[in-house]
Structures are given as structure tokens and as C-alpha cells.
Length: 479
Image (cartoon, rainbow, N blue to C red; front, top):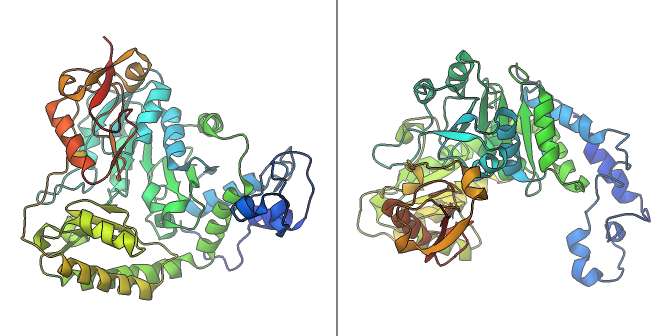
């Protein structure tokens, strides 16, 4: 059941934050800047630090007292859970990475198998290292022409013959394609196993009727409030239905991975975001969706350009995402991305073949159309010879798993030249950013194909989390 529009939603954290910021306290406790700058006081080092900490009010000893006796955070979390159809929610300051780790910790255990989408964010690897669970990799469908992920099918879950402790999938994908979460939930629940959805890129879907993962039957959903909504960077929420598992385990994992000095300011932006979306977020989203649809139609008129939507993808696509496939134009997405950056319009992702743009409720419909016109002009200015689409390795990795990520992480390691590493077991992660999906992870065998894929990806983006940024050497498990 969808929540009714709320004309004056409650905002316990926002209200308490405003009161704390205006109180002009002189605390004899942390933070070290003593909240002196919240009132604009030009104290010592104000010229260097004042603007950056002006709004910094801690939760403990700021927004609430040291004992959290007013319960502002708990009240705000309860309001979020109600808004998205969950039994309970926890606010996170470690991004969806923290939420993914906590969700995996809730459904997993040492040496226990979990079925996981191999194109999931690298934080799932971190969760597997901490938990010790054994991944059973599952794979989304790939578009037959563009080789991009077009959703996880329930058949992938049904095909798993061994018992697993749960299923973990990503929807929306980085490029905006959506899985049929309801069908995945039916398959998971037929086996009495929980379904966790990494919905980091789709927090806004929770405020569209019937589109959020929880309302489609997922047991866990992890959402980044800062990605497509209005929260401060690194704000996220993990929500849960207590249909299969109790909340106590998730609470324990969230507490384990949380800072003990949470920012009341960051947490208040989650509360304020929920209130804004309950008040008139649906109207705002409908305006944005209409503008994105208009922009897609405008760009679809560019000869050779493919604009990802339900028809071209062959699956549902996030109606706020703008993803362009360039090979038919001959333009180089990496070059276009650099030009857009210099113009002040950073792309979410820009590789040789694909441009991805995140549109949010903060964008103005008029600007979205102006941006579409700019993109059309830039593509024409960089038009080249038509080429076939690349087969991006990041979406089609099928690794040879030798050890669990935890086993590989904890064992001894040695450094070898990349050329000599073929056949060895990787002790580290090679993760193109964007999109944040590992090409090679701890415990996986190094192959010629994986090395070639890493080198190819390095031409368009940074390769994160490896110890040698030159990619000339690799840490392998010392066996």
C-alpha cells in the first residue's frame, strides 16, 4: 500500500538540528571546533575552516544529548521505514557500501554460500571479506548488441541447485536498467531465502508508486540518499522487512560498521529528504520524468545515437536516467566526457562507447532540455566513422574462483610482474571507477583476459583498490 501525500510531514531530526545550530552553545566536549562557526563567529582559523564546518552539528551532544534521550534519530528512521513500506530502516553515513556490507552480514556467515550478482558494486566484495561467506556468482542478461546489463532474471535464481543463504542483486544497474524485483522475490521466497536489492542508484524509486524494491517484495533494500535524492554525500539507508529474518542481526551489523561520532547534519539531510519526498516528491518526480522523456526523444533524433529506454534496452529502464550509446555516431565518449567536464557538466560515466548521466529531483526540467541540446551539438561536433560496440569486460566477467574473498585477503601475499601473474590467485581488487564493478577480485585466478580487460579499462577511468597504480605488478596469494 502506498503512503498518502503528507502536506506537513514530521521532521524530528531537521527540527532538532535547527534548534541545536541556533542555540549558540559553548560545549566542553567534541567536536574540536566547538560549533563556534554555526553562528558565523569569526574565531581562530575561521578564514581557513569556517565555511567548511559552519553547518557541522554532531548527533551526540549536539542534535541530541549524550544519551540520545530524545530519540530523534530513531523517530526519523521509523518515518523513513513507513514511507518506503519497510518494517524498519537504519540511516547510514558510510554510503550504500556500508548498507551492502550490513545486509550481507545479516544473511551470511563463515563459509556459507550466498548467491550474488557478479556485476554488483565492489562493496559486496568487502562484505564477503568481513563475513567469510562463499559467493555463488549469478549474472544478469546482456544486451545482444550493446553488451550492457539488462536485468537479473528469476531463472538465474531458479537455476542454482545448491542451498544458499540468500540472494543479492543490483537494481537499478549503473546504466539504469531494472530487474523484475517482484519476480526475483517470488523465486527467492519459494526457497525460503531472503532477497537483498542494492538499490543505491534508485532511492527515488521508493517514492514512485510500486517501484521501490521493498514494495516489490525484497526483504532488504539499500539506497543512496545522496545519489538521486537530496542527502549529503555518503548518506544512505538500509531498510528491511521482517518476513524471514529478525532485525536484530541487521542492527548488529549496522552498529559494527558505523562511526561512533555520527554527524547530526548529515543524518538530518536524510530526514529532510524523506519529508520533501512525502510532501510533493511525486509531483516533482513526474516533472523530471517527463523532462527526461523529452530529452531522450530529442537525442534519439541524432543520427546513429542510441538512447537507452525500455524499447532500446529490451527491459525496463529507470525513467530518470539518461544513458547514451555512441558507436553509431563515431564519437568518443571519453573525449565528450572531458569536454563536458571543462564546461562544468560532469558525466556520471564516460567511456569510449557510453555516456551515463544522473538526473535528480534537484535538476530543473528546462535545464534538462538545454543539456540535451548541448549533448546533441557536442556529438555532432565530434562525429566520426561508425563502429561496432565494444564488449565491455566489466559486465561479462565469469571468474575462476579459487578461494573465498576472505581467504585470499587474509593469506600471505607476494608481488609479481603482471605478465608473470597469469595462473596465480589475485590477493587484491582491480575495480574500474566508474562503475565500481571489480574486473578481478581477491580469490580469483589471474588470466590473460582479466589483465587485458584491466588495461583496456584503464584508458577511460581509474582502476581503484589495487596497490600498484601503474598496473605493472599484482599482489598474488602466496601459496
